[in-house]
Length: 242
View (tube, rainbow, N blue to C red):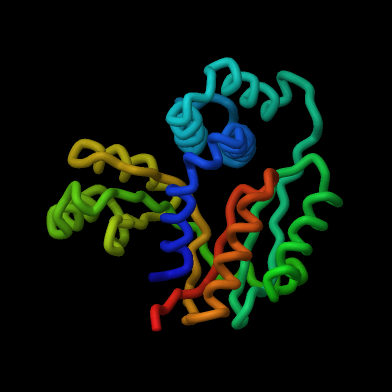
């Protein structure tokens, strides 16, 4: 299984624990902020990325007033601390490329925390641009595997404008162009329940890792994801079972 797919699955299973710590609300606010700034403003009717962010916030029972406040802060209607959108790049064990997307009000703190995680797990923080070229943005829609047969999903996905369908033991992944994410998701929802839909950094090629190196990379991803200011962690490896 690819590092991306395995990590995406683990993140979804971590959701309950994150919610208990209250971290999930912080993550939702960050996602809304990025969606407003990059997706086209604070009106969800004209901003598909913001609609997805609001859907995820509501799915974890985030109050409407919190959502509205997050949107208004992102548009500047309500003044607050400046939030910086940053991307950090580095290398994990086995030469794994690691991409870390951040939104923070304290650059010095977050870079120190990220550097510590890399160092703790046998990796190193790199210069800007050192690994970003190894990834590309893709819309990714996740569907539970027991809800639909592969042939039926493949036909529905292609009819909706998707590029590819793949899966592991538990989930299907439907990939599409980022700008097509909303339309593909909406079309698939007429056929089957969608688990999640978001724009992700997908590796163009992958390397294979097993044993200790694979364990170290997973630990690095967990440490990075546990940081409050980190939005997404992407790697370019496949975890191979010996």
